[in-house]
Length: 245
Image (cartoon, rainbow, N blue to C red; front, side):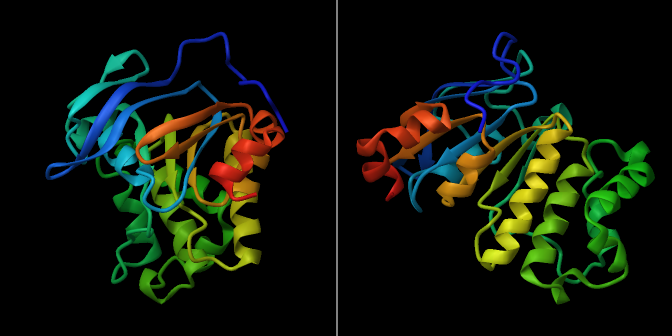
């Protein structure tokens, strides 16, 4: 397990400072600070309702921030429209997969390059099939008829079609069997090995910490811990309070 960032001396790829946001009049995010370095895998951990998905959606421009700043590769994306966020290469694979069930595997993948990397669509489909051979076997199959694990592979593959510079994976292991979870984390490790920066937003603490360079723990819309995975696991108080270990 690595305890240092692969690019700790470089400028952050994603830098979030003092981020606030919520629904209606209910504040969910209460001044969140988070960074992801180029090529780094960062785990954002927390229980259901901690504010993780709200964080993702505010960073990606789907929800409007109430305050704070989001910088991506040095550019200010605070308040940017989600299409501009995608064009910058910040791609989210949302919780619940959100595939198009009545479209084929190939059609779902093609839609992933609608906003970004359209001219390299064919090459990128070949790359996705190399990463997920099972999807190649199901090119013409309707996505809604596939298993949960295959749908999750499709959702990640669709995200890769946009040539992400940072891929946010929101609860990718949710609802999968233990065997499929194991396979999924192996695939995330493969993506990490290519140098792709990944923000892994998960409730699955153990396996997330095995592949992460650094970790953040969110509780009630605030970051309660940030540091190396082994540092987090060494603290009995942190393990009990935030990880249930």
